[in-house]
Image (tube, rainbow, N blue to C red; front, side, top):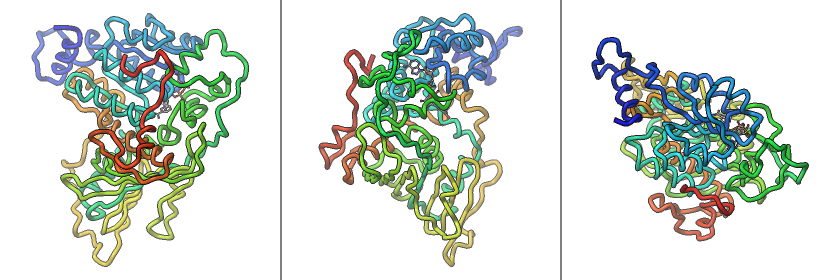
Amino acid sequence: MNRREFIASAAVAGAGLLVLPSGVRGGAKAPSNKLNIALIGVWGRGLAHYGSLAEENVVALCDVNEKRFAEALAKFPGAKTYVDWRKCLDQKGLDAVVCCTADHTHAFVSNWALNRNLHVYQEKPLAISVEEARIVRANWMKRKTKLATQVGMQRHAIPNFNRVRELVRDGAVGDLTAAYAWGDRQIRRPGYLPAQGQPPADFHYDLWLGPSPEHPYNPGYFSGGPGANCLQWNMYWDFGAGQIGDMGSHTMDLLWNAVDAALPTTAEAKGEPFNPDVTPVTCESHFDHPANDWRGPIRVSWYQGGAMPASPKPYIDLKKIGHGAMFKGPKGHLICDFDSRILLPFGSDADLTYYKPRAKDAVLPTIDHFQKQWFDACKNPSLKTACDFEYSGNMIEQLLLGLVAYRVGKKLEYDGAAGKVTNCPEANELLSRKYRAGWTLDG
Ligand SMILES: NC(=O)c1ccc[n+]([C@@H]2O[C@H](COP(=O)([O-])OP(=O)(O)OC[C@H]3O[C@@H](n4cnc5c(N)ncnc54)[C@H](O)[C@@H]3O)[C@@H](O)[C@H]2O)c1
């Protein structure tokens, strides 16, 4: 039995399915059952993982900024340090990777890690191009019985997510016809920053750029506080996906969890004039999704940066909900933010007799701890994670396709099985990104 199989079988033992000899402690807490984890991107969002990671073995730390190692090593003494994630992933004995780097490297780290049969916790967004989302999802789908994945949309564990799902699924608005999500963060950037100074000696700017095209160094990209520095670079096309990779990932998740959609058949979008450097602030995108086994076809919409869906009633000001979602059916609307919801039945027959609240024992279970849900699944991959690379890959592919529709200004017909736009050749050119020489997604 190799180390990975041992951890998996011990996790099953912890669930009470195997009887261990007396004196042998099973379950995730046994020292021998700890995962050997590489943390890539140790500061910023990485810091938020220190608490739960301390329950496992962090054996490798990787950051392009060597100044960040002191704090990380104080928490995880003995871990090896790296500035290049490609070298880090080749450390012997790794089981899993937690990746908190800048968005333009996410699909790379995830795909290389999967190629090495490592479990992956990838901070959101999973990818910044349609092609990246498809490649990483497909790679995981081949390995899903052995490897656990999770995208860092940890708000998913807020109980309201499942309360919203139950209301939609059980017909509180009648047969679902449309769902809308929006985010009102507005970060305006004129264009890439001009060259300013030299990177400090212990900051590997070229590795930070990684696969993205060359842009001159400017300390402004790195001037944000811990966990918020992403706002200094994620609006630029070469470093992020703007609002959809930022709060949009969390907010679309609130909608996505309730609609059981995969890939759309169409995408159309409009927004402020195109800027070749910077993703749009104000934009809206709309997608048609086919029927599934519990609902008819639906239209899913995403609004950002001030664009908003129409309110169902003048006395409800949706703009007061900074990041929210709304579900529409013939019997009314359900409006929500991350942790609360309002049901608005309407029409003369909307007496709610058509809706039966769930019995207590049919209420969907709570996720106790989002990061630990992934640890448990790494140890026993038959356990499901809420935001695996299939669920999250579909969600981000849809949103990224919306950005392509915005750029070409046409309604796109999309063949999700092939990953091709069928009515607009110039849109197909925008489904992928061009990488700097020496960088490959499939390493
Ligand atoms: N889930 C959430 O709620 C949440 C919150 C904040 C940020 N995030 C995500 O976390 C990621 C990081 O955001 P941040 O604000 O911490 O950014 P950041 O710029 O502070 O980067 C975090 C750390 O990663 C390092 N890093 C960046 N690129 C690297 C690379 N190629 N290799 C190794 N190390 C690298 C940086 O030096 C830094 O120490 C983003 O993708 C962001 O979307 C998620």
